[in-house]
Structure formats: structure tokens, C-alpha cells
Picture 1 (spheres, helix red, strand yellow):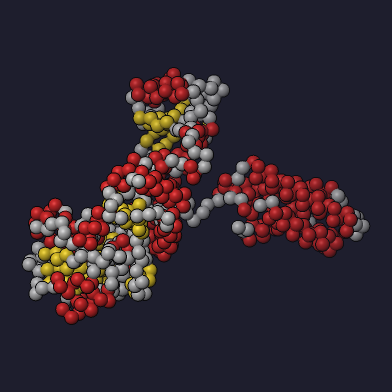
Picture 2 (picture 1 turned 45 degrees about the horizontal axis):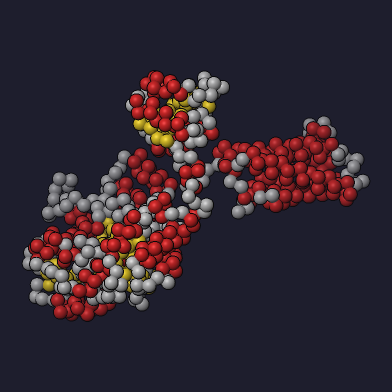
Length: 636
């Protein structure tokens, strides 16, 4: 993209070069005299010059360069653009402005002006190369990063020098390049980038000991294999930890292009958080502040969570399990009470009920959305029932209007487990605070992350105050530090987690859009597959918040076989979910058995989650789909 400020700078520097050229050539020391005597005559030339130079730079792509990474070729292109401009200016002067300018504008000035333009316009780009920074950059040197490893680099060639430069510019890696070792006699005894070059290689053991080296990086990827093995053998004998840089050919050995990369070499992650320099800088700032608990970042995080959920209050806690536990306490769940929930979920949505010695009463799921089936809830209500704990599975909201209507008729409290559904919308309403309270969780595989952490949202002021007390060892608002009004818990979120959440929440809409694109690409890639069904988005879901991308196989396909075969091909997958009522503890405690909740059990036997994250590439999706097709074809 053209940078307007660079265009203006180039125009001003062109004008400056014309002025200095005239002053030098005509031996004029007074700029005022120069302007009064000459510029009245040569102003057409000056205007043309300040237009021609930036125009040719634009045509040559100068304004599309990232000059911090500029190469000699980039600067040669700049020189060529300046010279081309001088030739055009000379031609226009000779054939258009002559003889008007010939008496006051000697032609030697064209040479001087071109030289000055190269120096000035090229010089500003040299300064940019040295000093250019972007908003995502971090000046690690100002962050007092502790360097804990002294590094010896084997090979003072381009690979080794580039490695040293990267380590010096990225102290967050915790490595300091202290020395090179090389066999080249021309390099031994010299310095490069301020680092001594020792040698020959046979002295590696002595150099490691004298320089107190903690780790060796072998950066001679193109050396004979036996040479690399010899260096590795010497490192083992010292002994000292070592790493060998792979050669470029090892990356492309079996792949002419990305699309032909075999699945095992790709090593796809199952999920991956989207962390940028902004998150890292925010965490560093908190670390430098020394205020690591119950501070401004937690308050800001809670404000942003409440805003995104359209709720009045938000309370940050350690994780989704603790958030749901506090909801059970606020609901006044006691021993022998019952809470209706779904068996098709992560186990904490039922465990939180057991924490208060109450009984989870499971209701089977809807076979399309996989959420709790509202049509079956009423039959499960007894005199002991106090609440309904709804789980928005996979980021798709449950049918809240029907559930709330049932709860109102039976005087039940509804809690939303929205741990997988931050930002999702049900009929235009954000999940979380549709019911009495809700919980979002921010584990690293979620749509956004705080590392570990969660947040409660509610429109009930009393519940919000209770949540804050319960998470902080039972302290009330006006209690002293060691005074506790009630039984509480250590469920506080740290400032480090909160500040990570602040940055991530500001990017939540971006995350959800990107994840929706990835899901759509998966839908396209799998559209022709037989015996496989992606998740159906039901009409009441007006905004899907993709937590994972799941597919369901027909009943005759062994889901576990698919998982094992995909793993052999380097593609991780996960079963979602083993129904809670069939988990060993629940079978032992409550006597559940297969057949109790057939829809949940059928889903649990046939659904897997495929690799999925915010920045997943189409090429990666194609690798997954090809591997899945190969596995399915092998079943025929």
C-alpha cells in the first residue's frame, strides 16, 4: 500500500536536492538570493521534479517495499528510478523549457541533483531499515528478559550468522550467542556481529569449557553428513546439549508444493490459540507492574466480558468448572436436590452438581443440535428439582425460550454453561446472560483464551456480589483482609490471565469470523463424502461460535478405528463426547447403563472433532480431508 507520508517526504527531499544542487553549482550561499534570482524562472522544472520522482517510485514499487527487510536489489531499483527521473527531467528541459532555462540552469546540475536525490531519497530508506518498527513488534531489550543459556554456534557462514542475529534480536528465547567455531582459517580470530570466531572444530570441547557454553547449535546444514556427525559426537563427549539445524532440502524433500505434503510430515495441531505480540506485550507490562492479582486488568476484563454478553455484571474466576460450581452455590443447591442437565457434555457440567452433594438428572439430547432436548425436560422434573443446567454444546445455543418457559412454570433456576459458546447468539440474544447466570471458559483450545480462566455473567446484582465473595475466600465487600463472611474458595483469576483476556476479547469478533470461514471450508471439502455429516446449524442459532469442528459417521463405521488410522497419518482427532452417565464414576455411583440415553450414546459413538483453529489454512484442511477420505476408502 502506498504510504502518503513517504510520497510527501520524497517530494520534499527532491526539492531539497534541487536547492542544494543549485547552491553548489552556482556557488550561492544565500538561499534567499537563490529563490529571488532563479526560482522565478525554474519553478516549472521544480514542480515537474517533485511530481516525477514519487510517480516513478510508485511505478517501480518503492512504496510497496518493507524497507526494514530491504536488499541491495531494492536499493538498485531505487537508483534506477532516480536516474530514470533525471533522464525524463533532462529531456523535458531540453525540448520544452529551452531556451528559457538554459541561461539560468546549467545542465551539469542534472548530474548533481541526481546524485543528491540518490543520497537523500536512498538515505531516508536506510534510516527506515535501521529504525522501522510496527505495532506488533516488541523491543525485547527494554523488557529485562533473563538470558539463561550461553550458546556456541558451529559454523560462521550465512546460516550461523543469521542464527546469531535472530537470537540477539529475540532475547525472549533465553539464548545468548557467545561464540562461533569454524574450520575456515580466514574466519578464525575474527569477529562477526560482535561475536568471536574460534576454531578449528577439533577444539570444540575446549571452547565449550572456556566460554561456559550451555548449548551448541550446529549451523552447518550443507556440510557433509559425516562432518555433522563428528560434531554431534564431540558434543556428546563433552557432554553439552546440542541442536542441529536441518538443511533446506530436508523441508522440501518429498514435496514440490504445499498441496503435495504428506500428512505425517505436516504434524497438524489439534487446536492452537491465536497469540500475537500484542498479547505478549500486555503480559510483560503486567509482569513489570508487579501487581499480579485483583487489579485493573481483572476489572477491565470483566467489563469487556459483560459488554460482549450484554450483561450487567461479570466476575472472572479460575476456570469453567469453578464458575459452574459458584452457580450451584448461588442457586442454593443442597444435598438431595436435583439439577437437570445433559449427559452429552464435558464432565464438569455434571461434577459441579456433585460438589454440592446434589444429584444430576440427565435428559437425552436432540439428535440434530446435540443440545438437551427441551421436549424431554418436563418429564424429568420432580419435587426435588431446583435448577436446569443448560449446555450450549460445540458453540451452538440450546433452545432457551422453551427451556425458560418450562423453568418459569415449575419455579426453577436456569444456568447456562456457555463455556464452549462465547459470542454465540440465540435468536439475536448473546449466550451467557439469557438465563439467571452463565459461564464462559477460556482454555487454550477455546475461541479465545486467557490460558486458564473463565468468567461468570449475570444481570442479578446480588448474585454478582455473591460470586465475588465466593471466589475470594468468602470475603464480602466491606470485610477486612482476614475477615470472611461465608465459606468461600480461592477461585480468583490472576492479572496475567486477565490481561491476556483483555486483548483477546477485543479480537473476539475477528476470531469468530475466521473460525466460521474455516468451518465453511471444511464443509466444502467434506461435502462429497458419504456416511459423514457435519454439525447442523439450527434456525434459532443466529450466530454460531465455532468451538470445535465435529463430524458424525454413520452407525456402521467404527469411530475409534477412524481415530487410530488418522493418528497413523499424522492427523490428530478427538472423540466428542463419551457420555457422562457412562463414565466409570457415574456408573458406579448411580448405576447408569448403556441404553439409558440412546441419542447421547449414539452421538458419543459416532462423532469426532477434526483439527480446527482460528488461522487454519485451506491447504491444511485439504490434507485432513484427503487423509479422512483415504481412511474411509480403506473401509470399503
